[in-house]
Length: 529
Image 1 (cartoon, rainbow, N blue to C red):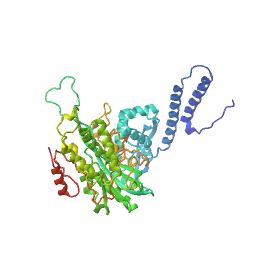
Image 2 (image 1 turned 180 degrees about the vertical axis):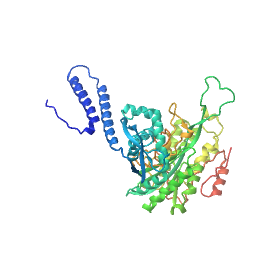
Image 3 (image 1 turned 30 degrees about the vertical axis):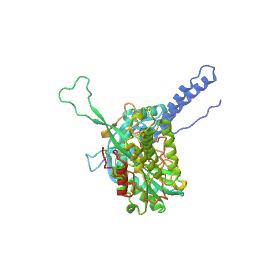
Image 4 (image 1 turned 120 degrees about the vertical axis):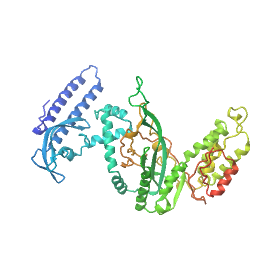
């Protein structure tokens, strides 16, 4: 075989050495492959990946060296700088660390000012030599899994050969940088968003989830016991908040979803204001968009949305919807208390079909639930639960009464979001936050206020810093299987209003009185046990 001569400039001498090693390995592997001896190709894959990483590092070393400047005077940011030190420095790439000799400079008029690395200024180094794409990759992995699992995943893929501490340090630094530019980036992203031509409405939703937080625990007085924890902590649960803005078409199909999030102690008011500003921007692009608010019925959620997302603030009528899955969850509990398991499942199935296909089905449901209170026994004789005298009124009524005027379903299917197409507007967006992974907890001083970038199911990926930016803590956010379906009642003569929960046992007369007083079906959340 005739050899091929490759001429390389002297500046690429590091690359020539790596290519020589790669050629030697490839020839040896080819010779072994032509033999009949056992061939473990996994080892070949690892070796090829290692050689590829060596090539990457050699290229980075050459390019970064060209970014260095060794001159008596240098203008940086319009200020005159003078050299103060020239020595080797390490830069961290996707393939591993690279050592480059570079000169550091200091402002000529400030002898005690911090020195400046011209290479870092030119390429956008983060922290102590981390290159931009390396930081992006680390932050992406950390927002998918905690730092321990992210490090293991990177090592299995043959990239980012760094420690878990480095992963955490870089991810936190990226989060800090994002926080500094959050408002500007958020405004630029929503302004640059291209609204789909088929979009006819926008659904705004808000939900919360309990997250385990690791907080310092006060040491007991006296001398610590043998084997006591050096840094005692306590595990407490706090509420994190998530929100979505889903753009859908005339058939109710979700086209795109923007996700927002705040960890416990985050700026919740800023989250809601961000929702309002983004909706205003979308309405400015297309004033004909219909606006819908979607929640699970908790009074706190509706109060947060209702104070900011009002008709006056948006300049149009707002439809308020109740999430189907939260409603069916409560009604399923009531059905299991009333019927045996097979009958309860069948009853809940019929209930869902009635709500989805029949206008005014909530009237029949309300009458049915109210009749349970006058019916006496709950189940047939012989059942373990049938020996209970009556069903608690809370289990029977609190959801059915609370969603009055919010469960009319006679409107055409095309007028409401389709099941499975509304991009997880409520419980799916943050159900997996705080996923119980062994050894993983949220640290109070390392708590992110951002939600990592997450692709929407069919809506594409939108990196929305401030909502979908990398957090400054190991964070896991994923989408679960169930997708909420909103109730609609376009033909319902009553205005839709948020559903509030009953928190105690109330008799039917009290329920009727409450309905008459509020007039629109809202039961005040003031009745306690």
